[in-house]
Image: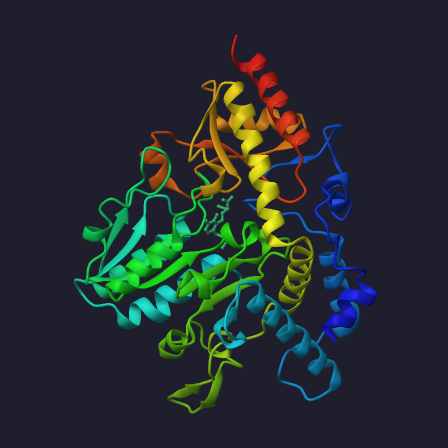
Length: 423
Ligand code: C6P
């Protein structure tokens, strides 16, 4: 049924070769003008734009297939259920998970990390245990662990940032000990673009009996990912950063771990049997999916995955590496101080910078008048800002629809800002 929606009603799944001009035609919002100028959207690390294939799939779902999941025996509800489960199958394949029982749907990375912190860490950690994070983490990969540490008496340690913007793994052996129970690390930093060596970290974590959670909010949209090849235990996924709707995405968890974990939210549909004073629960993933789910969103995410798979994730990564290399070069020539690794083999396309001592918020406002959307602020990474010694950064981030000409537009807009703020 999902196939009928994707292909007949909602048009093709997208271009099958990497032709940026052709890709741009699929994104209606990119035709918009901002302050009379063409829109230059350089904030995809925040949220990506959506192709018409995703928008039409959602419309189609509501116009022809909408019903609640599982609960009803009529055909419409069965259709909605099979579309939702088809989207789960697509996400399972996309991240190389062994079976769809290991893929939980929810609102994305923040909810997924909280789920693991609640369902795993609170259940299994004890006083004196340690949770290892890194200094580049987003707040959503820090705060849930702080909650779990407070509840269990565990403590939090951090892998330091190296001068070159990578993680400093020199002292990994002393940081990762038999007291470490969880290693929670980003797959790609939203500030520096840093991509830690996940396979190596997974092996090191397992060698001391810890589990590893990878924050995939930035990694999964921008790079091929195979959870089995990486050998990781948990992966968080934000659908809205990978062409999908907001409040789509979920959590990959190794099946044995999901089975041992406590449910996160209690309510309808996640149960097997309920008595007035106790309940038993369904098997994963449904044990973690209480109440009415984000059905249209996950169906839309399925269409986003079709689109990305049509392009090929290797090609997506290559395009962004080229664009990032060009941006690093142009920004450096323009006199920006760029943070993060310089080698695009080991970094993603979130490029943070400081330009001519102009506050990033002022910079972003001037750029907006030129039609250029960048993000300014601490990017939900306050500990990292303290280490970098800045209150905020300006950040341009790239995706499949961005072009070298848009990097040029960014640099031209920066030069305009310089004319305004630097006498
Ligand atoms: N970063 C940005 O950088 P949610 O909101 O749950 O989809 O994702 C949270 C999140 C977690 N980890 C990383 C590495 C992230 O980059 C983000 C979201 C956005 O602009 C908003 S702060």
